[in-house]
Length: 294
Image (cartoon, rainbow, N blue to C red):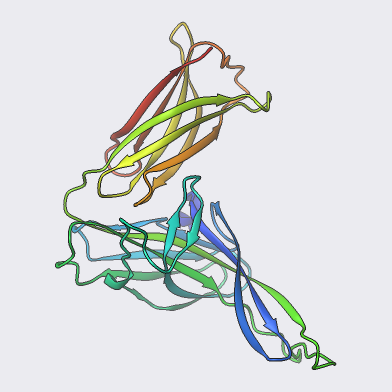
C-alpha cells in the first residue's frame, strides 16, 4: 500500500500554522500563516486527494503514509473553506450564500493518528443522516494537523527571566486539508470557458489566461489540457494541469497557465484549444474553447 501511494501525484490543500507560545502566561494560540497548493506536505502523503459521497457509498477510507524518518502524529478535524476567484482558499465559519457544509453529516475515525516512519494507516470517513438532505452539494474539508514533537528528555521549556516582559516563541505547525463532498440529487452543473487571452509580459514564458464559468447546483472538477494547433493542423500539447476545481458557490474561477516554451511553438499563429474534462471514471468533456492566435 505504501509503495503504491508514493507513486501517485497528490494535489492537496496545505495549511502552515505557527503556534505562538506566550512564555509569561504559558498559553497557546494559533496564527494561520499561508495556504498553498502542493503535491504533499512535509512527510505526509494522502490518497485519495478528495472524497465524494454520491449515494453509491456510505464509507470511504483515506490512506495516510509517513515518508519521513521520524514517527509523526496528526490530529484530524473538519474545517470550512471558501474558494476565491484566483483558486486560493480561506477559512470561514459561516457558509456563503449557496454554500452548504458537510461536516454535520460526516463521521471520521480515528481523530488522532500516529504513524511510524515508512508506514501507513487508514482513516475511515462515513456519511450519516443524508436521507433527509435537500438536493444539492455539501462540502467540508478534513484537516490533518501535525502535532509538534515533545521536547527531548532533559530539555525544559523557555521561561523568561523578566516576567514583566512578554516573550514569544514561534513553532511551525503544518497540516493538510482535503475536500469531502456529499452530493444529493441530479447534477445540473455546466461549465463554459471564456475570456481567453495570452500574456507575453515574460517573452521566455508565455501564459494562457481564461475563466471557468460554473453554473448549476454542484462543483466542477476535472483536468485541463491546452493544445497548440499549427496553421497546417499539427496538434502539440502545450500544457496540462490535473485536478482543477470550481467549488460552489463560486461562479467564476480565473486560471493562468504556463505554456510550453521549449518546443519552439509560434504562439502568434495557428490556434490554442483548451479542454476541461472529468478527472475520474470515463472521461467526459465539461467545456472546450478555441482561440485564434495573431
